[in-house]
Amino acid sequence: MARDEVAGNFANFDPFRVPSPCYVIDIAKLEDNLRILSDVSAKADARVLLALKAFSCFALAEMIGGFLHGTAASGLWEARLGRTRFQGAVHTFAPGLKQDHLAELQTLSDHLIFNTIGQWKRFKPSLRMNDDCAFGLRINPRHSEAENPLYDPCAAWSRLGSPIPQLEGEDLEGLTGFHIHALCDQGFEPFDRLLGATEEKASGLLERINWLNLGGGQMITAQGFDRAALIGRLRDLRRRTELDLYLEPGTAVALNAGALVTEVLDTFWNDGHVAVMDCSATCHMPDVIEAPYTPALLGTETLDRAEDMDPRDEHVVRVGGPTCLAGDVIGTYRFDKAPKTGDRRLFLDQAYYTMVKTTTFNGTPLPSIALWDPRTDDVRVIKQFGYEDFEGRLS
Ligand SMILES: Cc1ncc(COP(=O)(O)O)c(C=O)c1O
Image (cartoon, rainbow, N blue to C red; front, side, top):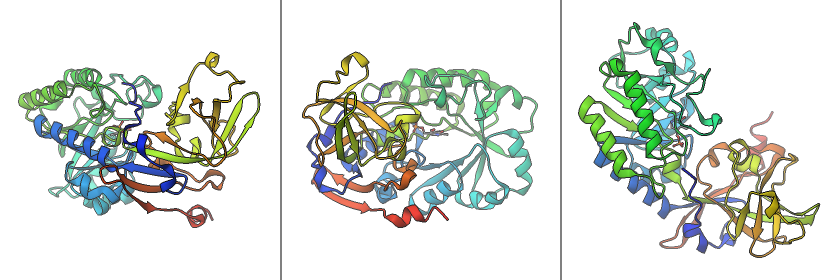
């Protein structure tokens, strides 16, 4: 399912109202997404957790807690963040756990999920049983749906989750649930197929557990996602198996709920028109390079094909960041109005997998973080970073 690149409320946002660069979170859109997820949760009788790895804006914890069951953490620090800054349950999974994190993880987590039966067996003797923390295992159904190999945990030679056949004959005593995760920005049909494959491959095992965490990657809040079908599928699964069901989306929570404000630092010509911004792909939107993808830039058309990139046209501009990395290119765009130094622009749909992934490579400043409520037009800058944040990570 393609990312839904609409300007939404940001079509009316004045980028000079915040410092640049700045991530601006649209609270109204976030609330719309949360309402959809809460509705799905209630109708499907499944619990929805926020995957903190995607979006960790604890300034909005109270609002998020009003709609979702809790948070999904990727290790000790996210579990701490979930427990101390957010509301609700904390469910933790990490591909590798450290012995000296275990006691605290168990205290922080409602569910602690192991990646392999080997880790589970190794750590089991040091876990407190009959505690408030339930233990689970990530299983790997070896059913690939993700289109991009970078996001396919079910690919051959994967390190994510226990292959189901390896669990045959294993003593699962003490494990009360399973976890699967194998989707990325996908619609209902891939989810349905993944669940079908899991049910088939793990049929004998599902009778031995009480809960099933179905991971994230479902674009539940995107236009066109078949939510009725999802609700029906989950209800049916629950009716047949009586399992407690969990979903842990990240992207779907913050979809289209944020933009990155940036300023043009320089423009010039070198085989074509170039603009250097004060935001960077590698430091502030790393998925642009990793995935890769080209983020939508308000007031422009994204150009993908070389034949559309006429270098003589001053409206056709290659836009990049201020770092030394030659590949710190964000995209090539056709601008409505040719950009000039000092202009401010908005990269759209930048709330998830951005703030959580930033770096200060080259000493590049971190973007500020602001909350904007388009219903009242109230803007609040909630975080600004300085030189000390750069220096503090070095020695
Ligand atoms: C285990 C797990 N759960 C949940 C998520 C959230 O996925 P998304 O943000 O695509 O919904 C991820 C993403 O990588 C994940 O690895």
